[in-house]
Amino acid sequence: MKKTIKWILIVVSSLLIILALVTSIFYFKVKSEMKAMNVLDTKEIAPDIYAIKDSYVNMFLVKDSDNYVAIDAGNDIKVVEIELNKLNIKPEKITAVLLTHTDGDHVAALKLFKNATVYLSKNEEQMINGKTARMMNSHNKIDSKTYTILNDQQTIKIGNLNIKGIMTPGHTPGSMSYLIDGKYLFVGDAFGLKNGKIDKPNKFFSMDMKTAVLSLYKIANLPQVQYIFTGHTGYSNNYKHAMKDWKKIKE
Image (cartoon, rainbow, N blue to C red):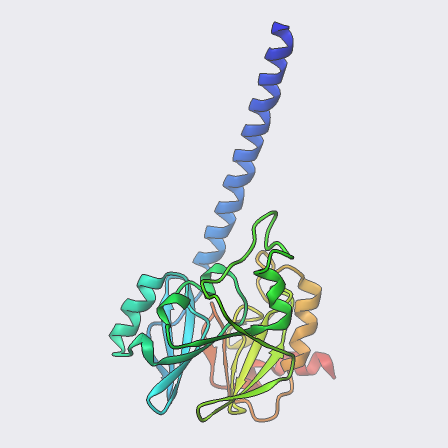
């Protein structure tokens, strides 16, 4: 009996050590990937386009008369509130939040925007309704009781802004890029920028890399786009140059 208990304790201890080791390696990798991210400071980065810096991620605002449309909602609600205050932008002036996806670092300040309608893609809903786990047994969630679903290529009008949702899955199954007024393209974590050119998304954080790469072709030849904005790697005001390599591959 004592030997059995001893072996059980040895096995349990070994499993706990392995679990602790795997967890440590995972979090070390996460921290390393975050340090490599290159985000923008809080400021106006293009006419009526604002970046909000929240640690290792950017959310963006597009001004529409006296109101704003937000693309994503940051990693920390308190930080977002502080950064908005730097720009003298009141949270109640944000009338819509376009979620590129529902990972925690893109949805944290939703509760701050009490006058905003929240939008996400139809395929991303599985990430917050318990159907699809983000990692192991972990599920995404958003702090909003209601939201509006968008389909691929669906166009909506918010204030004076024309917005098209373009499905770019891979990072998550429902990742969606948003094209505003035909020239501003917001891609969230679907893709990154490296040396001024669009690069594949971060492999460590992507759920399906093969699909993510295929999604690149959907945004490689948009005729009127001038700017492309990413969640973690800044932006480019030269879309044609940023997509140059992918156009060659497609052809």
